[in-house]
Length: 597
Ligand code: GDP
Ligand code: MG
Image (cartoon, rainbow, N blue to C red; front, side, top):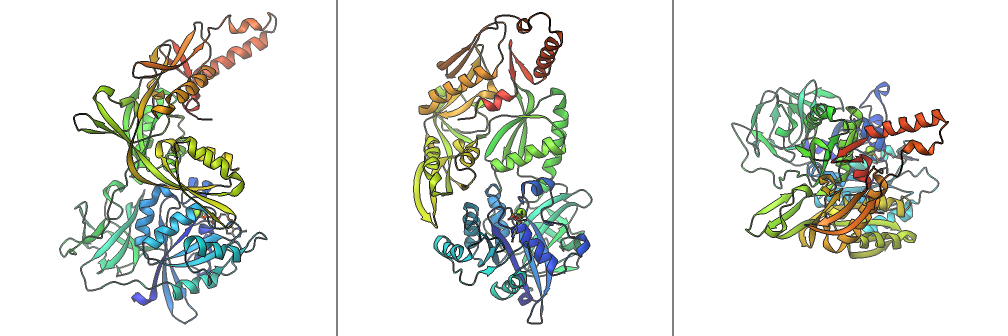
């Protein structure tokens, strides 16, 4: 295809502003998919994504569009993941296209993810076409939202396209805007092959499928290619374009986007951002900015039933076939038995993987509190990356500890601002900016990631009744006065409850955890001390008193059925308990004890 007949673009939007619906309309209106095959949200393949309405893996579709100027254009839409956890994937997909549609819900306005995503597009030097969606809604205020886009993002919105992705209104204008307002790609057909690895996924029939954008040169079926970062070479089995079903093609030239298969065994072998070239006639320089995704949030996953350990191992291996960005290492915990220490790109990523394990593989899991990666600087100069508070080395050998900090952007209606500021302040936040945009406050905080990974987002939603939007990016590692706090139940440390905490907050956290555990652990025949300690020093303590009489004693004699019920209830409760020394701790306690409220 001639370069001037190609337009490559992505759609950036805050969640729920209509990105998937718009993609569907574009596909539908151009007859890319036969009407009978059309189902909602074609690009959101996985069930879990559908349910949560989020797109996790980038995907792409090629649309042939006969424009009003009488020429037919090839439009390639790359669908980027909408969430910050996948920021690196988003930035790669952005590098693969020349323009973006900025979709903003005209009844809601600009939100935190709108900003995060549009800044990525601006960084990638995109031409940006603002699209105001949902103008069918009575609450739509296109003029106000245009002003907001200009004020907050600083791009011209006077020619924003007003549409309803739901009713189809304005969709032809979007197609014309793509052709006439977005630039054609550039590239040299005669240069050695240079293509970007944009994404890859595992297909049970085809093996690993690799999505690429050709920058220079031509890639053909049967070519012997080389991945420049990994050094691996492969012979191309199949070359295709996505419409969105795979349609075989003989070659892809500059500016084109497509997929190939090449007997690649694992998604792990394909690094997003890598440069693909010909083995025999390689290009001189790889594409810039390659960086692997690194897990930043870790937690333990343990089967509720110890017999499910092998099933959990299998399930994790299967999921990793398609998601090389999460790591898993076997872990043993005295409290929870055999399990895995898993690393994720962020909180949402963690939730998605855990949900899939529970749902698709029917496993009951205990998730320990998410923790970030601390950098422990030892006195001898060694730096240990601490993924699990339980592994914290002896303090006498530790010089100092660093933790990851984030820049968090929160947009919130004015009336909830006070609560948001308090929440951020409570989480050791440092306010960096506070501005107003169209009746809403935009506040920027520097926060420790450790204080955000646990239940920050839930708390934020609850104090703002769901009206706040939130986004963050990791900025740097910074030293702080951090210590490991252990919890001892009946004088034995429970490793799964250890946490890293700021020294100034340790007493309060410790007290809160002990109080919670006192309520969460059932009474036993003996009294149980529950303590929080730093090193050998106890900083908080509660005592769970002994059970006075047999539980059934209070069912005065006669009522046999009630007595039976009570015993059954106890038995059912027991299944969900973990024996710890002489004490039984309910599974639910492990997470509940760590919630801060
Ligand atoms: P995404 O998260 O950006 O992919 O958003 P979706 O495309 O999944 O849309 C979110 C919700 O908004 C869905 O319930 C859509 O049906 C609805 N929606 C999308 N476009 C419109 C529109 O133009 N008008 C109205 N009223 N609803 C829309
Ligand atoms: Mg979507």
